[in-house]
Length: 233
Image 1 (cartoon, rainbow, N blue to C red):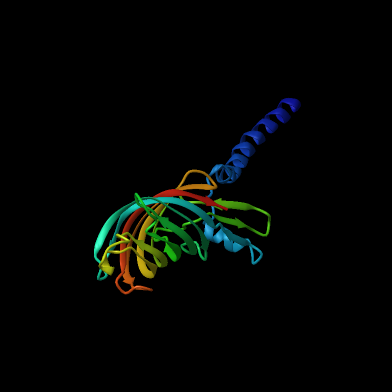
Image 2: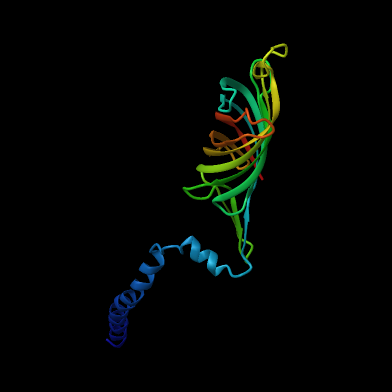
């Protein structure tokens, strides 16, 4: 009976202690298996400390263009341009604003009616328009890039122009005219991501304010559509 009493005491103690211990440990087990919400990206960036660095990528682009060129000066007329080409560089000032320079050449069947430089600005109105790389003080690195980025923009253009004519014409208005002019243009376009470094780009561009240059008879407007590729670096 002595040993039996001891055994019964041990069994009774275990029966009381095990459920109690399980009840005490249940909350910890449930918490460890629960899904804890992650911190917002902005808070993570803030917690990274003052040593966190953000880098914006810039773009080089090549495009081809087609459209209509019209002279609204004293020598009126219009023509179709096709197979034009442009190359340029866009510098990301912020995630949504970029400034740049481009050189453009417009062609038609027999001549190069326009060629020259543009100074332009773009505003990506739906968010970041470039690749954003963030590296925090702990060495963690993240890269953010939108799939597509629409923008609106404006540019100041300076062009060498050539208006075709008959070099043997009696009237000066009927002869070919060459010189320089300038214009203020507006644009709307989109950059579509293909890979980390490449994007498809398309843009519509039209003249808002044409200015006469070396020859007051020539003030040229244009409406051009262009497409090509961006290299993001």
